[in-house]
Length: 185
Length: 426
Image (tube, rainbow over all chains, first blue to last red; front, top):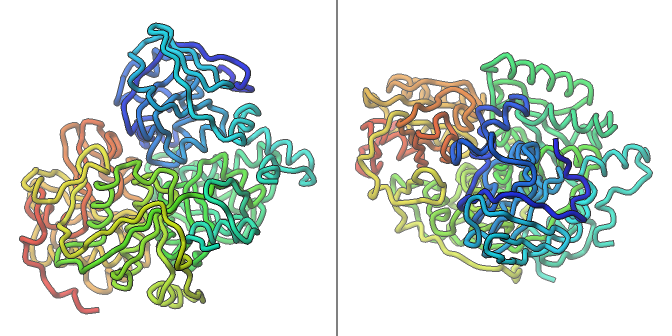
């Protein structure tokens, strides 16, 4: 499985999968497979939108989405499936609240980038520079600037998500500080 | 500094006198909820991170409600694991199979207090804003962090004020008000923001109506769907042994926007497939044939909802081509509806009664749809593939509209159907 560890410093390159507005969690992770093993769940990711997605998506590919991507349920299965399929980054006009939190919490790179939906066609080669928040369509040479994620979320993504932070906290037997302790300090 | 409800709660939970809009704060969580789809995962994550205890075993409520009774061996195994986890972590509050839907139980069993900060592994956790709690959904990994530390980060949201004015007409309900709002604001109209309901009609909104509206706040993208705690709230909580005092925003709090819903002019509303914000007045979609009608869910599965349905269905039978599925939101709801004769009225009308729980709403079982089938339901989401085939269609409406539609086998304006007043007396 491709790693999303320390994505800050690397550039993500792949093909664009272009999606519309309001791509919801039932499309990303249908409820009927909620208790199925991850390997089975990922086969149904976006199948109602594009039945070839789960079989054809390649590590590093980038989802280019419209507004409100990931709306609906709190199911972490949605970002988890994208991460497991090797999706390099989700770049959307806007991200639904819980999806954004959970993506960052599990270390799936995401960017909010106004204008991105109109700048890509299916299959366009795309490069995402996460650290700079730059999204490039390598076919049209269009370069878009994403809105920066809050610093705390960038740190969390760079660290691979919440779980490594939680492990560190457990190892310090409660004496350590959680990463969130530095917020607003 | 004058604060909105969301700001007051986040400031208090973060141990701060005030908070600034857009600021990130670390706050103490007052109550956490996990249900059967994610509970075992959350406990496994907690263990894998090296924790064998939760931060406070009295502040977590675990509920088995989505797959009840278990439709598959896999579900039964997950439930078995959750029961072990509940024992191992020594949790004080656990509601097993058949007690009810998590969002019904938290209020009904007196877990929610005005001013609380509450998180749950379910997007419809916004429901508890009905009782004045800042309540919102989070994912499994963040819940593991909460269970380990009792804390989580929050961004202080802007608040949109929704003023309710006028009086609902006969056949029109609070579900219609929130569907109307979803149509007006869009599925991301309140993205990252809080909704705060108020206005002159507030005292007329019972806790049931507040739960319905706060429940669907998330369908507009909202982080919280807050109602002030007033006399209505205090009475509801007192019956459940919870002492509470009034809680509301400061009078001169700053809102990002204020919208008014005029209840007097409101028609019954229907949300069309496959997006909650595709809302039309019922008159625009009347006569669309339906195969299934569903009355239940955390949105509209309470006694008052079943009662409204019974008012339309008393002494009648659902259309021969339509199946009516009813799932009470909790065992207490089911018992009260049974004692009042509501259940037998629904059964006489041809309803299939499901055990208390989520029923078919989240697509696990108990009423899934074939390609080309249409369902009208009182629940909260109509995404493609939500209830079985992605080629099925789901319409969302009030209990009155769903019951009237079940009678005629097509979407029907409840105002055109005579209702029995047999259940109108409480």
